[in-house]
Image 1 (cartoon, rainbow, N blue to C red):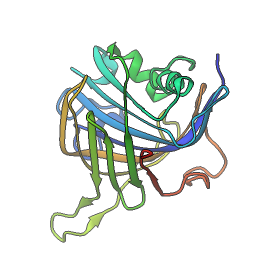
Image 2 (tube, helix red, strand yellow):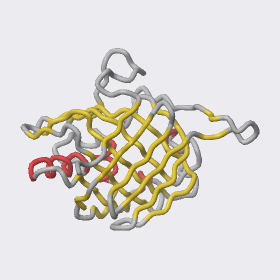
Image 3 (tube, rainbow, N blue to C red):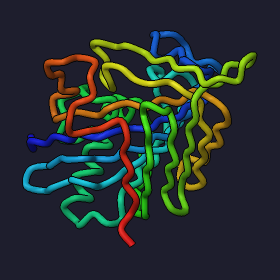
Image 4 (spheres, rainbow, N blue to C red):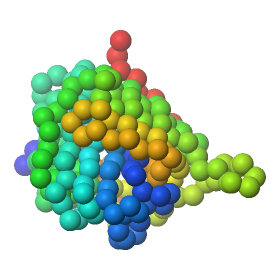
Length: 230
């Protein structure tokens, strides 16, 4: 198995109500699951291939809950990546060179009956975890936007998060609201639904847990802006 590791940030948006029942081992709000996720790598490697500064995304849908399977996934990969980096990013997104069910990407892939051929395009990711804001785009394929939940009475921004000490995607996140859409492979349209921001730190064995639980590590700040090269 290839040794790999990445450290970065994620903005994810699904079709569930704020909070997302899946995070609590409950069934999805509307009985089915649809999601678009954007991932930016601050630093990383896949064997000898450096992954620093690269981006990737997925659009994925299941007719029921994720664990019931029969899903379809569209991997989206940074067009700036060379051949080795493209193979690396696709491998990570689809759970290859990963212990069985060790990452959320591996779980999602295992629960899909179809994984589309990867699309290579320009991907820009601008996420501010503390402010619960995001603006992401995979050129010609998918877009995503995130904002804080707003108090319906006062209009003030509402801050809330989820703590999952043994989570396979994150240890803690910031929750907000999102609007996302995808047009190729897995067409989706998500409006004012659950969104989250979280730190990503993984290798082939799963999520890496380090001392100082609950804190953003120095390598990844609250804010990450990763536009494609011009």
